[in-house]
Image (cartoon, rainbow, N blue to C red; front, side, top):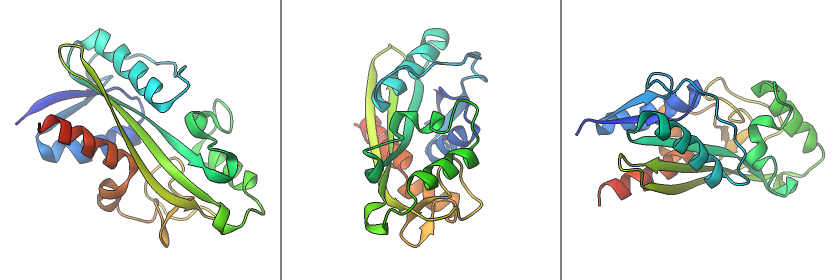
Length: 194
């Protein structure tokens, strides 16, 4: 099987992960820019599902081919689920990954380890060539560490502890088996195999 699918994202880290998971299974993954949809999509939804659908639909409307989009973020128990859908804007509009991680660690100062539970959540929206859409949701639980660790990954990976290591300390191959995105994409692949 060699199916073309457009990843509705401008996030290089996200596109890389989607490629690493889907291309070994016979998919040719194009970024939205490579497919001719050089647009910025405003994430105005109030949930990961809504934002994934917004992004997928905007790119589908331009390309009219199979599109996959994800919206993902970090939900921290001690912060009542924040930063949630605002994960990327948590430390302000033009903040870096470092800025977001510093803000998160500041918010959790003095919070004991047993209350630092968190989940990476991912909603994947797949739009078929005929325009029919489907949502697949994945989750990976861990805790927020006390300091950034590791060089791999992106976003909140350096502070998200999965067992004894942060997501930034594990190899991309291992992360692509256990992450929230891997979980959602596994459900997507199960749907395709039916």
